[in-house]
Image (cartoon, rainbow, N blue to C red; front, side, top):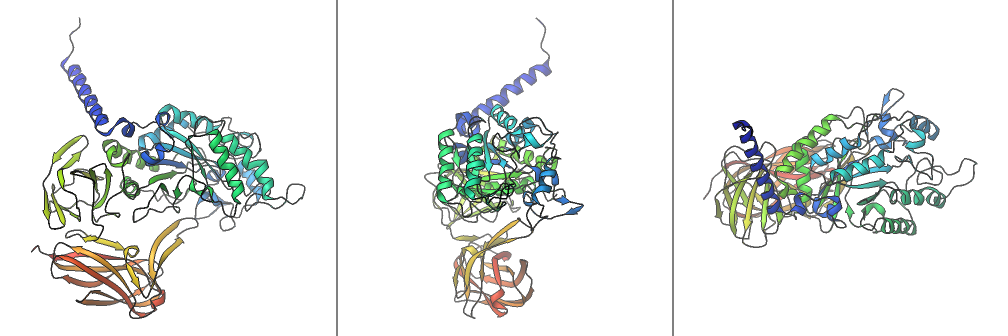
Length: 594
């Protein structure tokens, strides 16, 4: 027998140790969480427990890449036909479709990227609003099989690749809008012979048959993601849902099917909620600013930004579906892929933070990060690490059994000290993780916390206007586009009717002292703001506003002792009706414990 070298023996021992640790993690968190696979999942389990998915917008618009006749159109690429973008006529668009030849598409590479990113399923555009089918449709010739030079059915290959790597697979289908088929939503009103076309023509000849195709010819699917129902009558939506239920009984139907016939709620595009949302819901977001590929768009989310938005969605009780837009040749931009892989490496180290977890008992983020829950365990995802050696947790009501600082599968117990209604954790001065550090807190019972905002004694605390009680002004959601289709969302306080108008927040202060108060707002021209403590001091300042939200210092406000306060902000002079308050910030200047 040949003698085994010491280096080989060391390697074998190392591999055994690593496998033992992996097995221990599986036992600790449960195989259903760490290794949740599509073929093992029950209906909706990948959505409810996986909490993370890949969205793919890909089509003829990816080949156009937001540039027509040498001119770049800024906005979401899949709407390039629209008159608010390039306004491409249907005959021209059909000609451009012939140039779509994704020779570098690799289905296994895409599926493996989603797997490496920590995602649990993929949803891809079978047909977007342009009417072009990304699979070999037998009922309509405007599809990749008959128009593009490529010979493969990319949807069939992607479905098979997902099955091989253990991911769920599903389709996006634009069921109401079809800009190229007669009678489709926002499509031509007459057919090729000049006859009047109705929505029923489109539905019976194209929409319903294609939904039958995608739900019967691509194996098991986990979700059909319908979009923009508009004024589509309920009876049509019901027929589509019935087809999904019949052909794919384990599949979910998206909330955007319309008429409350979907299985869950989809929030607005690119919207991550600030407070917990009840029920099953998802947030759909992009790795940059566009859904479809746009040649100029290099505004990629960093791995930390991806993790921050993912954890925020899970901590609010939802699922996060993050989009990638492959280019016209079928490849995913490498910068997006790198961010996904890097954030996925973190998820592999801390799967218990993301998979199978529940919403935060605080019902909102905290100044240093966010919290997810599994049974009686809290997972603190610390994105802004305190350099003082202390991390402050406000309002935790359930008794702590142990607190541990995690480093992959290693755990170091740390001290947790009660300071009134607050908990102070002793932590290292340096963050143990580059992206997001994790603290695990085991509780004596079900997690309960006071949702009152705590003013952190070390870090800046930003509280959105959404959490204010408003008198004499209007509190409402504001939505706008930075570029066409790039949605922004905020709950604002605006239309300050009189000097008695105010927005008030209840806050809990652990460290008395001076805090710099800033307001984030937009408006017109000169605005004067006042910030005051109920039955106490008041500060006031003026700045010139703009239509963009900006943060302005108002002044120092002193909290004379630890405890609860009611802090109010008012717009007292200038074009007060135009003033739009987004948030208030508290930054400690000099704070000392009693």
